[in-house]
Image (cartoon, rainbow, N blue to C red; front, side, top):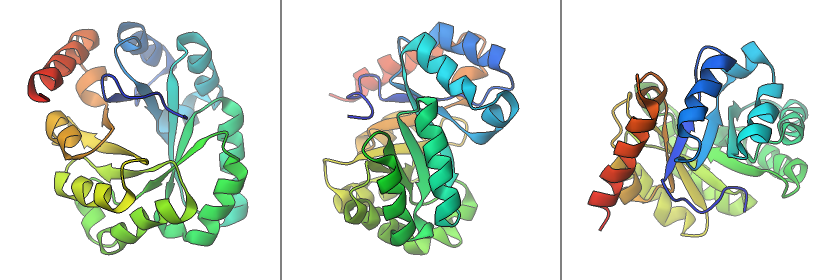
Length: 222
């Protein structure tokens, strides 16, 4: 489908300061991870072409974590741009509603996966979006989106959302590592991919960190 079947279960959050740093980290790790996730800062600094460059060089799956959340005409333009860049999936907020999500699905046209954000991993994610996070997960089934984002800092939510969306949709979980989410617990709870950033790219030896994470998961998922 849009992302390959997970092997390492690691999605690298590539939030480095520069393109040069991003390429350096990927040189060390691209063959050990399942996918790369971009947020806005690096793309705003280097341009959307960085997605295309990395896709062409490393032949790796890419998720644009742009948390799209606007009126439909703007959402649709963002999805179209990201689709043309070569990204395999894009994250959008559930609170934009079913009508806007359905329009995004039409623009995606089964060429790019749509992942619905349920709640943020930070404490602020509990203030407002928690109230509706289960409904956002339900929208994944209603719109036939590719999957959802669930907080790696709250494994109990991952389990709950997995029961809502079933086994055919994917779950990607942010907040693993520096924010306190545990890699093994996140995958045990039902996530397909744990999004890990600073733990890897701020390390003096990113490759060894990924190797250690892979070994840790293999030891504990038996």
